[in-house]
Each structure stands twice: as structure tokens, then as C-alpha cells.
Image (tube, rainbow, N blue to C red):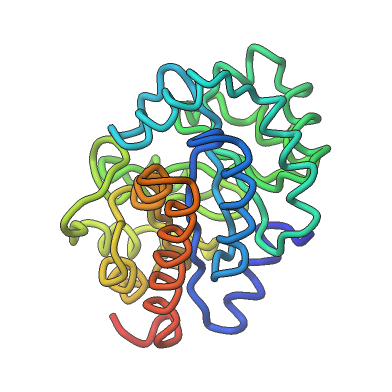
Length: 272
């Protein structure tokens, strides 16, 4: 399977904006999670972000928090998630990026955790509560396992901090579009456009925009502003949880197709 960096390089050569859906592992159950990964992969996902349920998800809004709680109440464990990934990842084109908080990594030990996820083919890691000042060890160790650690830039980040994050982030830079937690928003703040400009002035690494994007028109707007990737979480998690698992999977498939169609209408960078 290709690396995150190589996949972005290929997308850039084709002037394509990437779609990165997010779902929570184990909600509504692990079998549905496996089916959802396959469906997203077949319907336009260029990467897939998979959230490991955690008891204190400070960066997540109510939709993803509720999904994590449901998954934990069903007894979802990291080892079970990795077991399904062992079966699913060899048949996916989209690299898998794990989204997890730092405590589970520290609990298992950085090297042991990374060895576990690398063994099943995970290619990227997002740790929203990882302080920049403490990221070096995880980034360096992850690199030895072929895993790229993606760092987040917040709307409140200073230019100095933006510079430092841009230097250290691997794979791509995760630009948070709103101040606060994840969740669906009715519009995307214009501040994102300025942040993209600030980042472009200091790095040529790909930039993915997430938090708050839930509709095709929002995804297209972010693409027009120059993002290399659009990250959509709560909208997918909400649809997957509604109705029966079959209905949820159908809703996820439809949303994935709609988002991919929206950002594929014209090459990146033609509309600003």
C-alpha cells in the first residue's frame, strides 16, 4: 500500500483534491465498521481516518463523542479494531489514518503501540492532544515503522507555531477550520482561506482542512480556497448511526459519492 505522502504526490500530479472521510471504530459495531471502510474506499475516499473510541475525547463534538461512547459501551478495544484492519486493509486502495488520543499510546508504550498499528498496515496517525513540544519522539519513532504523524494547526495558532507545525508534520498538515471541537457547521469560516495562505507561505506540504465540513458545497469551497484535502467526520458518523446498519451504510455511500463529485468538478487551484 502506498504511503500518505506518495498518495498526495500522485493526487497533485492529477490536480485532484483528496477526500478523507472519518468514522468511529465500533459504531454501531465492528462488522459495520469493516463494511464502511470498504464502501468508502470504493466510492471516492482517497484516505480514510478511523477514530479509536476513547473515554475523554476532548477534541470531538457531540456526534463523535456519542459514537465513541456507544462503541466503548459495546466493549470495543484497540486489539479488536486492529483485528478487523488486518482483514480489510490489504483490499483497500485508500491508506488508513488512525485518530487516537495520546493516553492510549503512552499506556502501551510509544514503540509497542506503533509496532501494533504498523503490523496491520496503518499508514498515518493523528493525535489531537499531542503537544507540539512533545511530538518529536512520536514522529521519529513512527517514521521508523513507516507511519506518518499528522499535526494539527488551529485557527488561533500564531505564525511562529504554524511554522513549527509545518516543519514537523508528516504526510500532510491538518488545518482545523473552526475554533472548538469537531462537528457539523452551517458555513465555513473565511479565516480558513487566510490560514491556507499563511501555511502556503512556509511549506509545500499538502494541507487538509477538517472540523465543521459536512456538505458538498462546503467541501467545494474549501477546495477552491486551495486545500489539498477535505476531511469530513461528524456527517459520516451521524449517517452511519441512523437507522439499521444497512441503512447507515447506504447513507455513507451516498454522502461519499456526493462529496467526491463536488471536489472533482475542477482541478485544484483554478478557483480562488
